[in-house]
Length: 92
Image (cartoon, rainbow, N blue to C red; front, top):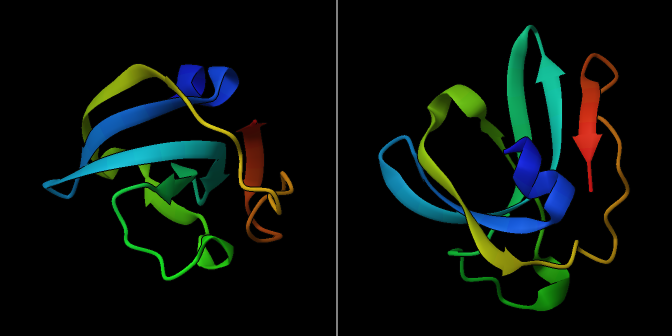
């Protein structure tokens, strides 16, 4: 996941058993667990302005593969930990 964030690459993965395609924007630590904030590219958004990052616990991800397909970060994305108790580790 760190490679995907650093290189701005899309990942294919399974999250809690569901196949997903994610554009990971940042990784952070919360209560000793690692999370990634990513855009779920499989989700149907009503508009581009509605798109937002979801938070996924890394322990819930499986069969993760970094693809060669690049992504552009969301225009309004600002690297920051989601809460004051979280620690930002890496961001695009």
